[in-house]
Image (cartoon, rainbow, N blue to C red; front, side, top):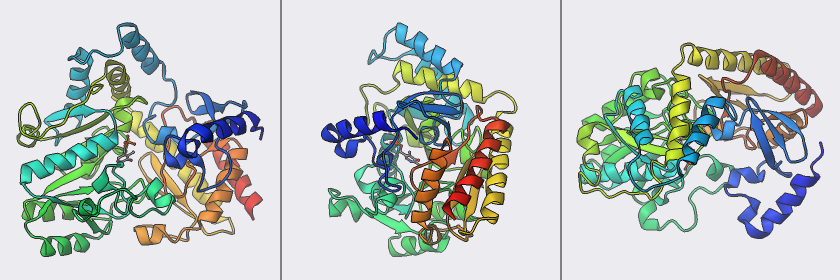
Length: 428
Ligand SMILES: *Cc1c(COP(=O)(O)O)cnc(C)c1O
């Protein structure tokens, strides 16, 4: 695999950007080596600056349900750009995106658009605290909700990959307001409410864990959280930044039939441009300025380019059969990979929910963070590079999700399964 241009760029980048990257997992620290610098993408494929071609299962970490450079998205962005990129005043397209979100998510009557999932989660916590008058929040070890101070406690994704349980620079006083529970363990949540009966504003959860690798919610887990929060006067926040418009058009709350109080969104709703959102029922959302006392603002929030890409993406996802197709493609892929894993010498298992999945180098089952952490990350690193050399791009860390898009064909999937078989043979 030719990498001279990427190597040169990575060296240049490291002089001016910490670690050469603008988000830590991109650095390939977990798997070692030089990250390919990507030149362009089309459909299910990306090409790097050295001309290598890959079938892409990273999907920009979740937003690209339509694949790269979908014509509807490209056209929407081009049209919006020609009319001006930002006004700091209301535009028609942001109303359209807000209406699409409110129609799709049964728990959301009103929604505020922001610029990232981090902002959405940070704002959702402030809202829950404003609404309840309480200060503590419960999060699950291994779940990731962006990099706001109080949420970088035992976080997943890069924080898990790089072994930083709680980031430096987070004041102890903030961290102390974050109580930790165990994913898929409602008893651990009950215990926190027993210890702090009148202090917990909200429980925030990834309804399908994606940032410790994909871990499905155990039977009754989400319903348990709904029951416990309601009984204790706390709010339930579903962080649907990955799962919104991914595990179903109406998100995990539709797929699992649970109604949260606040929902956070990101990734798919921006169609590859920077958008986040938080929403809920009217009574809660009326706390947000200018209607209420909870302040939150943004110079570029509801940006016309970003919301145009989001609207175009959601309209494409409304086409009949899209979610069936996404799921069928993911099933074909994970069945094939599971078959290859079964014949391999290294124990491995694969988790999937809808079109998100993770292959763990782990005998399985993987249903909790403690089991996730037993995975063989060195084997994952070898597997990652063996696949990259065979033209398949997956997440450069064991503790992340993979995604299929509507652009992935059966032929792409079959080529991938063959590459997985070859990669496992090469590792043995
Ligand atoms: C990606 C992600 C975030 C953070 O979103 P950014 O846009 O990266 O700030 C929050 N929550 C979950 C579940 C995510 O996967």
